[in-house]
Amino acid sequence: MDEKTKITGIPVPAEGTAEYEKMNKMAKKAIPLILIIFTLGILEQQAFGMIFVNIGKQLGSEALAPLITSIPGIVLGIVCVIYGSLGDFVSLKKMTIFGTLLLVIGSAIGFILGPVNIWAVVIARVLQSAGGQVAGSVFLVLVSKYVSKVSRVIYYQIFVAVFRFSAALGVVLAGYVEKIDWRWLFAAPIVAIFFLPSLSRNLPDEHAEGAEVDGIGFTLIGLFAGAVTMFFTNMNIWWAAASVITLIAFIVYINKAKNPFITPEFFKNPAFIATMSVIFIGYFFSYTLNAGVNAIGLNVYGIDSAEISTLLVWSILLAAVLGFCGPLIKKMGRTTSIILALSSMGLGLIAIAFAIPYGKVAALLIAPCIYYFGTSFFYSPIVDTATLTVPAEESGRVLGLNDLIQAITGSIGVSLFGGMMSSGVMSGGSLFGTKAGAASTYANIFMIGGFIVLAALAIYIIFHKTIYSRTREEIKDAE
Image (cartoon, rainbow, N blue to C red; front, side):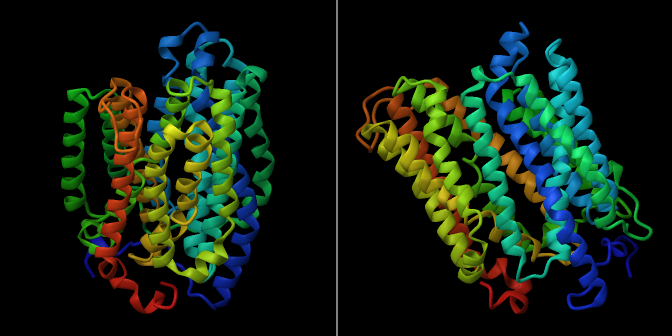
């Protein structure tokens, strides 16, 4: 066997064996606590992402306030791929302990020093983001390896529901930030320290025999992700050059290294590439929707962010409730669920554009529900599909790349569309009867976003056979 392909990851016991049943029971005991830690991390991300302007004003550093969101966002995109990939090689127990301690330390720094200096807030949020993401990555790796194939989609749906409820709570808190002391938001994740004894008993402690952490590979992919994110944040030519250079360096490295964490074969896998393309295009507008809805409320209807969040939160809560429809998705199958999801997401964005002339309730409450309805049916089947394009021992790397792609595509989308909204492009009118000005700008941008998502649907349908070609026998009954 070629030396480069000897170590593929921690061996996963076959379903039905005594070892698998043992690992399955341990995973089910650990998952609830992992989800609580994940919830705390998402809550922090959503809340601080909405209130960073208030914090900057209070600390007299308004110009630096965006760093509270941008720098942790870059870090989050980088660690997503690292943690998911490490899940194939290193102890999930050690990963979780490390991440939880990082989350708690960051929270303590923010609670104690945050009100003193904005850099303390930035550092605290970086540590929280880097630490809290471990829980999300470990959950996905646990499910992909130690939960039966027929039940995985249900767990993925629970994951989506937890994310949505956390996001909804964050939106509500952000909308009414003037009524709370933001410093206490940092205190909430400290409770995670009490979960460590139980997690230590129930998380796998295996590592891949003979495997070494690919520090160079992780560094290069991290630098590439950071450079791409920074480029689409400020469109600086130097960040563009850095993106190209780090990408070339990464490609050269994985082709020359003895045991890279991800091999060139990943990118020669048509099923994997097609699935990742659907994910990249399907999530392109994901970060833009809330910002766009907020802009419509402020600049078209003249209402404040508190009222906007009160309207928007219902669509997010709908997605959260539908997040528990795992059994329905299991019955519908992956193909039907993904087609329904992308259709609803694309049409939902177009519906927002159509609803703008009909008032704030139609545009900010009812129409976003269509988009968020679709998101509830997209995440779990597309992630499950992605993991099935590779052997189980390599699923962690696919999950990590999936998270990285979602972070990068969302950042690119919000940067491009955010710039278009702020510059007032396409303001002369729209197909939806909006008046010239801001309303037409938003209507046209949401229409474009809708067609982009529908393009992902077209790619999925066209390349459907390719996507499922490597796992046809295993999943033919679940499609």
